[in-house]
Image (tube, rainbow, N blue to C red; front, side, top):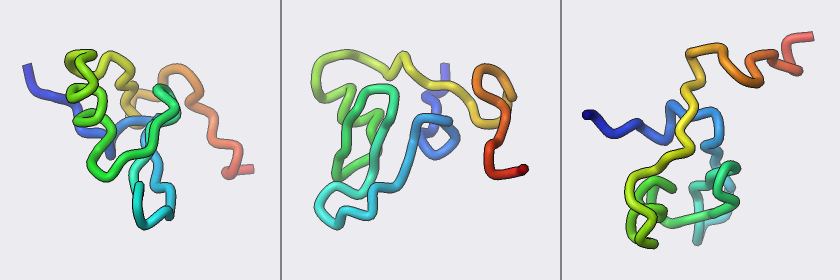
Amino acid sequence: MEKPLCRNCRHYFITYDRQLPYGCRRYGIKSKDVPSKAVESAGSGECQGFESKATGSVGSANPRSK
């Protein structure tokens, strides 16, 4: 099975913090590397919180499109 890419996840965001530029809203973390690697290195195994931006599932409404 292919690992999901954080940049394709609805929980992924850029923090604009030079020390910790990448974040995950699902896990509430900021990291130097992509959040899925931080989750793996913490001993939690593969990221279980991935939700594709493209599926239009939970939270598909875009509040900015109004």
